[in-house]
Amino acid sequence: MKHYLVLNMKAYQTSGADIQKTFKKIATLQAEHKINTIVCPPMPMIGIAGQVLPKRKTLQLGAQDAYYENEGAYTGMSTPALLQSLKASHVILGHSERRALGETNADVNKKIHAVLKTGMTPIVCVGEKTRDDAGNYLQALREQIVETFAHVSREQFSQLMIAYEPVWAIGKNAVRSATPDEAVEMALYIRKVLHDACNVVDHADVTILYGGSVHSGNAQSFISQQQIDGLLVGRASVDAKELPGIFSAFK
Ligand code: PGA
Image (tube, rainbow, N blue to C red; front, side, top):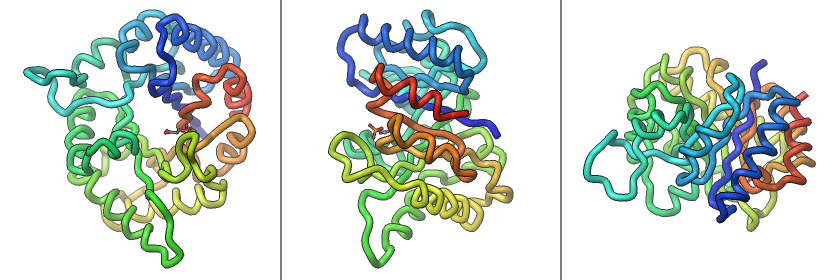
C-alpha cells in the first residue's frame, strides 16, 4: 500500500537558515527511507523550497493553505496558480488552526475546488473539536464533511487526501494523541460518511491520513493500521531528533 508522510512545518522556525537546515534533514532521511513525503514549509519559504529540495518523484512540496482565487487584488493571499508555479503539488486546506481564525466549511470548499482545478492535490483536514459521551461529535463531524466536500465529484475524491485531525489531539497543548484504535474507528466513520452522503462508491480509494501529536514513539502504531494511509505531522516535523524515528516508522 502507498503511504504518505506530510510534514507541516507550520511557523515554528523563524530564520531562513534554520528552515533550510530542516529541508536538508528531511531530504537526507527521505533519500534513505524512500517514503512518499510532502514537505509543507512556512509560506514565505515555499519558493526557496521549490529550488533547493532535490527533485525526486517521492519528495514533493506542499503549501499550508491557498486562496480560492488565482490572481487579482487579494492582499496577503497565496493563490493556487502561484503556488503551483513555485512547484507545489499539494496544498493543506481547512487546517483547524485556520478554521480557528474564522475559516468556514464554505471557504474550505471553495479552496478545494480552486486547488483541484489546477491539478494540485488538496490535503483536507477534518476533525471534531471535542468529544462528548453522547457521541454528538460524530454528527458534527458528518456535517463538517458534507459541507466541506460539497459538489466534489466521485472522481475528485481520488485526487485528494483527507487528514483526520481531532482538534483536541493537535499541538503542544493537546490532551493526548488519539489512540490508533480511535484513529481507525474515525477513518472508518469518515469512509462511511463519504459513501452515504458524498456519493463515493469505493471509499477504500480515498486516502485518509491521521494527524495530531504524532511523534517518533507513536508513528508506527498509526501507520501499521490498514485504514490509515499516512501521517500528517506538525511540531515533530521541525525536530531533528524526532524526524529519524518518524521516517523509520514507515517500514
Ligand atoms: P501536531 O500538529 O503534530 O503538532 O499535533 C498536527 C497538525 O496540526 O497537523
